[in-house]
Each structure stands twice: as structure tokens, then as C-alpha cells.
Length: 164
Image (tube, rainbow, N blue to C red; front, side, top):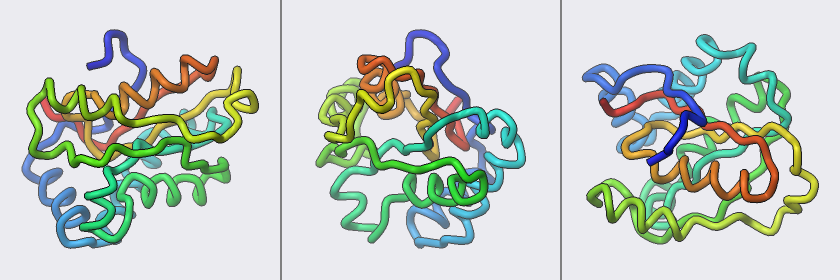
């Protein structure tokens, strides 16, 4: 869990959010992915445009294998195209899916996420936005933010939904 606020979620996770998220992650509806990216943009476009780079919290290898795509990457691509902010895949994912894990196991699993060998030196002092779909425990986005901050990067996360 993040100790101090290093990000935001646009909406609380409710039944409508669950339906949208399930359409996207379970049925591969790219319309739902576009809708979620548009929700972020319509609520926070000016703030998003203050960043130098957009990245995304990586889906696990297993999740990408099951879905055929990385849902965070897809939303980040939409936001990047809409704002003109460059997109880079900065993280190597864990192998295990988070969805069936308890809070402590999610935290341990998130520790497997590593920074890719994209030159962190080029990012030092830059503002990087980490995109994800839902904030459940904060383990995944928290790990991403921490990895970037350890390299001198000003990082912040944004999710569409937050489990409350």
C-alpha cells in the first residue's frame, strides 16, 4: 500500500464500474478500454498533459497470455495518442496474476515487478504518469512508483477505479 498519496483514482469501484471493467478484462471489449481511457481524459486531461512520459502498471505474464493483450498498456496507448505524450513500457511484469491473491500475497507478488533497462538516467527529474485500471491494494502501482522514484523520477499513478 502507498504510504503517502502519489496518485489518484477517478471513481470509486461500484456496480457500473465492475460491469465496464469485466467487459474489458473478461470479454476483451476494446470499447470498454476506450471508455475507461476517455473517463481519465475527461476528468484529468490538463493534469495528464503536465507529464513528460506515460507508462503503465504491467499485467502479469499469465494475464496477458489469457487476454491476448495488456489492458493497462492499451489504456495508456489511448491516452498517449490523445495527448501527444510519449508512451514507454518501463516495467517487467510478475508471472502471477494478482486477482486471486490476498493483500499480503499481492504485495509480495508486486515485488517481482522490475524496471526495464530503459535508461533511467534519461528519465531522472522527469514527470512520469503510471496508468492502471483499478486500485485494489495499491501494491502494483505502488511498486511502479517506488521503482521510478528510486531512480530520481517524479512519478504519479492514475487509475480509473478504486476499491473502497
